[in-house]
Length: 314
Image (tube, rainbow, N blue to C red):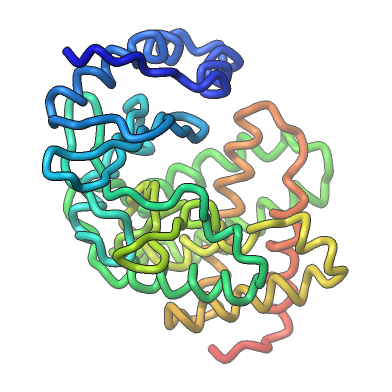
């Protein structure tokens, strides 16, 4: 075993302590040994301090042939169970390249990107949104492989859960909005789509690279309609959106840019985006929240009003 001290970022360890997650705390305790095992297994040399997200560790490394890479470790979960499958299917087209993967632990060896330069560092929102839209268009152009989760199943489960969950919201207007979102998605569920979705493509999940200027990271692969992939792009940097004083204008500009780049029918894309608002609402309610996120309310309300005005071609 490689005799190297691996410093686990305090913030990562603290995030598991706050969750009162016994299995997560056990994973954190075992993490230094796991890192050492894979440094040996893949003949890697640490090449800088470890970084982290909300759930995992990313260690810059150098491969035996001198290639820079990144060792990514995080607890196995339903969300990341098919990440390697998605990355292999995309094969580096618009997304970080997968060098190796251990299916037992979920540990991945990835192309190294510049974690200090996420797309959120681009001040011009229109320019940043064009980058996101172009990458998303490339990703959803690919048919989903067998085995990844299906939007058809997830949407059906949401429609089943919504009537039980909605009463937990305090505001009657928010309860009506969530029911409207469910109705909009129910109209589309018979045609759930078969494209390979990223499911979480926002500015901080796009990093600068050398092979391409920008590449997506951290997919949660899903087979479905591309319209279900738009919401993370719509609510990027929400504080800045609010500060413009024109929330409706920014949401519609972003929505038009995304749907145009992906070649989507805007009515259908609206329905699936409302389905995504429903999903976020159900997650929040499950976490004990009694109110919706203001960004979700604003986006859903804007799209519903615009669709009702029939300003988009069918």
